[in-house]
Image (cartoon, rainbow, N blue to C red; front, side, top):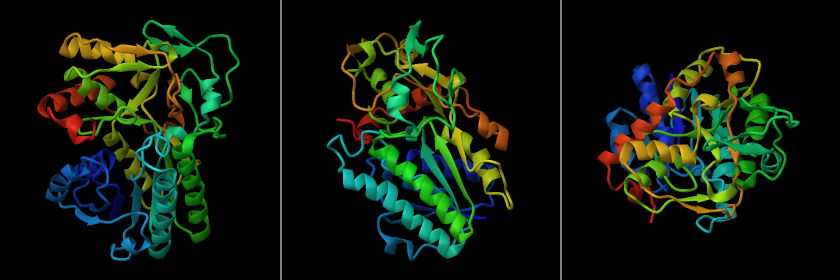
Length: 356
C-alpha cells in the first residue's frame, strides 16, 4: 500500500509515518510539507533515513500536486493548528482559510484524480465554544469537573464530548475551516466514489512536539517548567484548573491501519479520537507533576480569559471503540515522562519551536 502524508515534517505527521513503518515495514510512505512551521526542518533527516520520500510543496498550490506519485490513501496531517490562528497577529485570517480549507480542496482533487482514499485528522475545536463555555464547572482538588445536578447539552457527559455535541458557531476560524473541510471531504467521497474517514483529534502530545502556549501545551509546559521560564495560568480564576485530555499520535496507527484496510466499513464516518477521562488533567495538576519531576517552580495567575479558551474539554472516544475497537494505548504518565526526557536531552527545544 502507498500512502501520502501531508504535513509530514510536523510532530503528528512525522510520528505517524515512523510509527506506521515500524508496524508495517512493507508500507510505502510519501510525504508533503512546505516546512513553514518553525522546527519542522529538524524532522527531514530522520524521515529520509526511514526510507520515506519527501516532497517540498504547499497545499495551497494546485501545481505542487502535479508531480506527486499516485497513492492508495492520503492522510491529512497538515494545518494551521492553533485555535488562535488568524486572530493572534502571527497569521492572517486569509492564510488560515487558504491552509486549512483551500488546501483540503486541492488534496481532494488529487484523491479524485487517482482514486485515493482520504483520512482527515480533524479537531475537537469543531465543537461549539459558546455551548461548552456555558456548562457549569467547579474545582475538585486542582481540576475542574462538571457540576452535578445540571442539565447537560446533548452530546456531553462526564465521559466527555461525543460526536453529536453542537458544532454551531462560534468555533473559531480554525475550527470552522476544519468543519468545512470535513463536509467537503464527505461530499467529494460520496460524489466521486472514494472512501473518506474523519478522525476528530483532541490534544496530541509526545516527545518531539513543537510546544507553544497556543498549541502543544503539554510539551510547552513541561519544557518551560524545566527551564524555569515564566509560566502563567490564564483565565478561570488564574488557578490552572482548566482541563484537557491528551493522546499520543502513535496510538492512531492502529486506527489508520484498520481504516485503510481493503473494504473497510463502519457505521460512522466521523469519530472522536482522544485520550478521554484516563488521559485528562488540569494545568495545575501538570505543574504538580513537573514539581515532582523537576523541583519547585512558581507559576503566576491571571484571571483574564483568553479568546476561545474553555474550562473543560475531554474527548469521548467510545464511538471509535464501537466502530473500530480502538482505544488509547500510551498511558498519560508515559506521555509526560517521554516529553520530560526529550526536554532534558534538548535544552534549546523551545527556541527551535519558535518560542521567544
